[in-house]
Length: 464
Image (cartoon, rainbow, N blue to C red; front, top):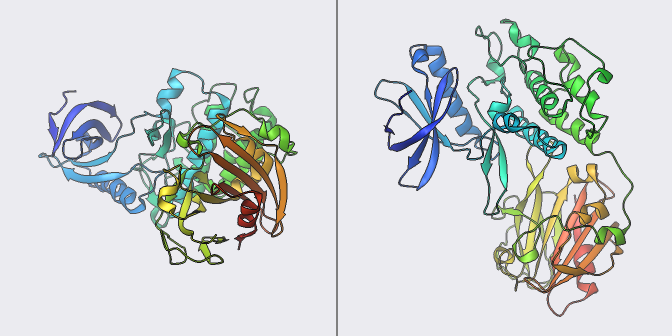
């Protein structure tokens, strides 16, 4: 295949892939100094009006949903011969198919990937969309942030996806053998979110099974007949068997329900480690300035007015989502989402930042402040002490963990003194008594403050 020199304003670098309906090229945008993926409808389908419309539907759908778990659309156009093309964000990390071809993926990574894919498909289901073709080739990876190795899992190739209201009666066979639900072989069947649950289950078997995935739909079988790799949690087999049940009615209703079941099977409730042993766990996260939380500031979305630098008097409150905090004297706040923490619906879980200068706090080690996060999924997989054990600071010295009860919440608190970056960091977490949720507070206290400042701040954290 001869590569075109240009497609629209984009210089073509090389071929990325060829599929049944489209060819994808790597292009360069000189204006933005960025690479893009350009998806062009295959020439042999260019005269099929139904396929042309489906191709355009994909770009419209992605543009309408515009979510960080989906491949983003930058624009659309037509070649001189009339074939449509879509300009997409380039997934520079390749596909899951590429990684599986390179070798077996370690079980912890495979479990995380499966959860990320479920969360992405849950975004589609929440908007009334069925993907219909969930395969390793349609799971992509894109670099995220400046830290090496940080990447985002993306759901791609929605060319076969359709709104639920119009998802039945498709005359063409839509899907990939081995991942396609049995009902997709029936032109008259109603295809709904449970078809995607089947595809997700087959994807899970491909990632975690001890034996190769067979092409085609397997007959019904008991959970004990599915042999998973040795270090896969034993309860996961029953989840994957139900997800891939032959009859749609026997499966989980949608991706969010499957995601929740996977989380329960992978992270059963366990006894909390002792606070002292939690404080001695190995350092797992290395981020600049020793602040471990990641936040995405939304400029106060869903929060009370006030915002950065409002200088509210002590005793004022600020609300973001279910969280309400009492602000220390001279502090203000801004609403955020908790980057990297997602609910079963695929949405980032709520959080807020409060500080004398909230927008400078994350980047300037001289500015005191606090991050407050709320997570139901974290509460389902671990305890407050266990969560803090994942958030240790290897370049800092920790004091023995302590507990304090504030406003009905039993908090575990670990304080760190650091030679670099922020001189003091206090990590605290508690399980909310009224909701199945973990509340996490990371505090960089003012230089002249002690335990009382942290305890007063914790006492002012409330959840609706």
